[in-house]
Length: 537
Image (cartoon, rainbow, N blue to C red; front, side, top):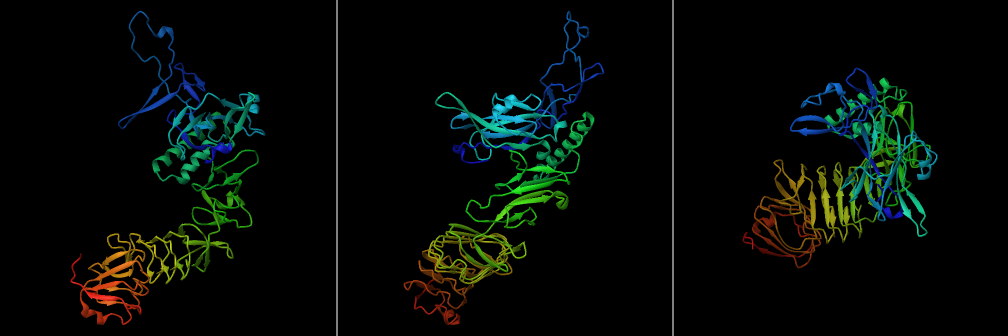
């Protein structure tokens, strides 16, 4: 749905197919005398009483006069039958108002050359159905809109493969008293489209099975009533739709749009995406739910042959990423976002396929002044030294569970206060959510400090289970004033404290082990060291 109503563009979501007021074919009703009447209109409503499901009729069946004795009290069932005539509903949600004016809906049961109110009024009842008396329901939240109308269009299961063309509009009264009709897009939709959407996307088996049975029922009704027999609900179809939030359409002849559909194997489907995404980056290719690529950057329009694909498709357009990537290595970031997501795949234009990303090279984010938070995708395994080099506004780094090689990947990032490691990582972790990175031993104990979050100020007590401080662990932690190292730390690697504030104080519980530390553990700097009792202040 479009977010800007003020542009006089109306949008609506065709989604749920309402079956709660009838899971029955508009067909035949036994009138008690053995004859059948088609298209009966007795409406059924269902109710749930515990685990029992019951049906209650809101209609009244007339009994013959001779069946009742008006002179005597009578409490008897005078007629019983099964109702096949109730309806399903296609449901459309639209913004409740635009500029304070109520939104209405127009429907057509056939494709038109002109989808307007005036043309609608001129159509015969067989070609158009007008619902001008407002919606049949209201919901509080639909697709992010605070107030929506939900319009219901009645259908019978025998009409499962019939397309309905729906268009939202509202009537604007001009200063001269004339009426101007403001229209939204015309949407082509059917019960069949809905059913295949459910079967392609829904993970709840009971709902999927229900939809399958609905199609079986609809197909049987079509055959029995000779309703569109050339396109039965039980024929073979494949779903084509788009990932959630994707701006794309299925291109067809006519002034309507189609966002998804069920297509026969003999059909061709043309899909189209914007040439640039909301960030202004250029289109590269299409990708389906399995990661397969379609088309290329030469055209945003692509024609699918259903017979060649033979599977349900949930598609999304892929746009050029702001990364320099070669052979699975990210070597540079060219964007300007504050929050950045590092991908685990990229489009290989030479070979026309998607490739995996596993390595982030040195200097990838060198001298970047805009990033504040960077999140790495799963499957990234190596982040090389100085990947984050002089990033003054970087505050948070989110590492994946798959990363297994880290050493000195942060330098001169004075605002960095948290480096979070995803749960499940077999090599690294945080200790009590302190935002620092520790290496794990085989028992998942944090035994080595690998990287201190260099923007944190004040004092830092090395956790007691830690026995080693890695190379570059405190490098450029210029806001850090004091570090307390307990007696269990037997190893401090080279340059662990390189390029820190000259006023830093390093308090050591066991001064005797210092001789066993690397000769250049201070990184060439002359920090103040003092003996510590081991007690925290």
